[in-house]
Amino acid sequence: MNMAKWVADTIASPAKKGFPVLSFPAIQKMDVAVKDLIGSADLQAEAMRLVAESTPSAASVSFMDLSVEAESFGSRTVFRDDGAPTVVGSVVGTDADMDALAVPEATDGRCGLYVDAVRKAVPLIGDRPVFAGTIGPFSLAALLCGVNEIMLLCYDEPEFVESLLEKVSAFLVEYARAFKEAGADGVVMAEPLAGLLSPDLAAQFSGPYVKAIVEAVQDEGFGVVYHNCGPGVIKQIDSIVSNGARGYHFGNAIDMADVLPLMPSDRLVMGNVDPAAEFRHGTPESVRAKTLEVLESCASYPNFVPSSGCDIPPMSPWENIDAFFDAVDEFYGKN
Image (tube, rainbow, N blue to C red; front, side, top):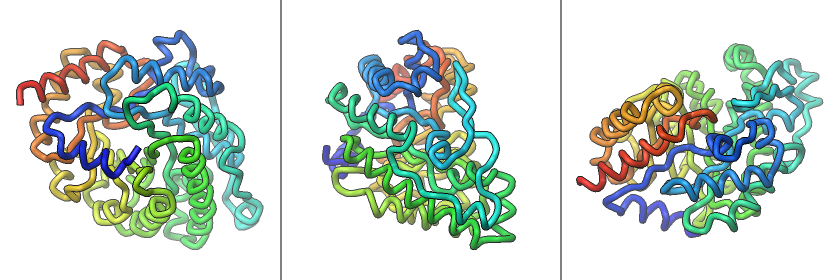
């Protein structure tokens, strides 16, 4: 698919489709556990097909499992039945660790399974773009090093952090290329931990590395959507916009109406109904109200696309998910 045209057409359309980060709730329709889903390319492809069949989403997004890349580097992962896996511990903290840290192949371990899942899902979903999910460079480095530790190292040993970022970025380029070869139309790159950085640190330890990945993989037929759900997005906006992604996805820690005036009009800007408070723990009525509230404040910007603020939790009631799409249709049907 020509993604440059898809973005332009989406911006030009007077009525938008919702584009939530929606995949894991498919487990409810399939009656499987998260840990089973993430261990099977066939189950993942079927889950993506089910979500596409069940919703009028603007695009399909694969699973935002932010543990899988760290696991390929040697991190220990904890699996759960009803939630995404989490990384525990660290694998790099000394110069010797850094020297020993090898850059894995892009299809090593479960990363290969996720690439295979997208390869299998693409032929099943022919009416919308298919995006794979990846982690961003600073967030991956933080998982390998430890979040508290890397924040201190940014000040005390910046060269150490930069060496780690070079390694993880090299891996993420090849991982995105593997998804591209598998038929994906783009990747949603989640860089949530960069949201903890000051503007200066974000410009040093996240922005340039994201930009290098975007420049290495994005072209007319493949797009990058950058995700940052941190509270510091507004202050970091210069380095965020400079990464050149085709789309931007922001979380509910900020007001979308504050960020939209700062964004280029030719880039998609998506957000930001609260995935936990609304999709997981809200009601259809509260989801409808919040979705309409976001639309009322943001839809005057042609490049705005309504979405969740982050990945929708696995056990979010489908009644709430349906209420989001219904509210989007209701809003654009009246306007």
